[in-house]
Length: 407
Figure 1 (cartoon, rainbow, N blue to C red):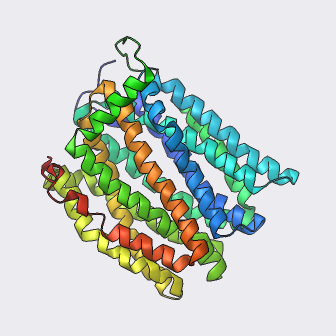
Figure 2: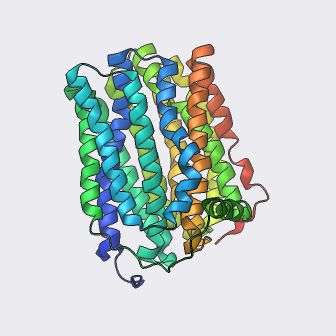
Figure 3: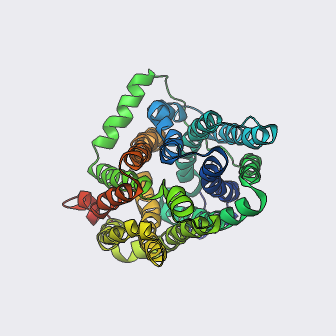
């Protein structure tokens, strides 16, 4: 399969267009469930801070078990069937929630199981998806392609999170989760039109050897190590600042569900703004310099986030700080992902992506567990403060790193 010409619009490339359309709607549904699932646990099952934190952590901690084998496996198989199968897995798992709700047997145990299945499906899907993009568009157009993918995903975040609070209030959380399940079926249908790039046959290697090769490659590249360290700090901090938001906003401050949806939507707007401007900023400053300077300027805003617990106007001051922090996330999601794909050979993409995903998503899971523990032992305020402190220091890995000078 040949890559498209540089002057050919990306959305005229059939494989990339179908990947784009598949991801756009499923991302919308995922953000609805992002709000609806913890709200269902809090409002219908009486979940507290510990249970909400565990629910958030399970979907990400699944990566700790499957991350490294997933990358080694995806590097040896066709990637389109993997993405379709995981879409169907996630759809089935989510469909079980409204069925159980209407049948009267929904429990936290089922929500935990669904979180694990959806987390496993998302891991395999993302590893395959990131690995297939360079073959669809060519390495020289990765930043433009990721700007489109991440920017559209961020737009769906805004729409999904904005609609989720209202949708839950009007139709109920089970209906909102049902819509997410249908979005995965949509994604599977569009992925059928993604042409599988031809790959060179490889001699079978032991799984352990392939995993070790991927780990050595990542930790032997100082650019990838820098991206990993700063991403790990940010991913540890974000759950501490966000997992307990349903408890803080809905239960402690007594705000309606739409306020939670609006707060989260502000974060989606930040990701959208950052990802949409990443290509232009990266071309002007250079990829590494743009990521470094943006981190240095934006991370101090984290100090404002814990004041959310004071209520009143501090809710919206905290939301503005959340916008600033997620702007950085959107920019990094384009520039650093493109850089990771650019410096990694095709035969190593799955393993690099999975190893990176293992550690970054593991940090998210650890942050969720830490939020649950701190929230239960000392309250939501200290959890928010700890997350803000880690986020405010997450620019440190760039110091003296060669990534700062990458074009």
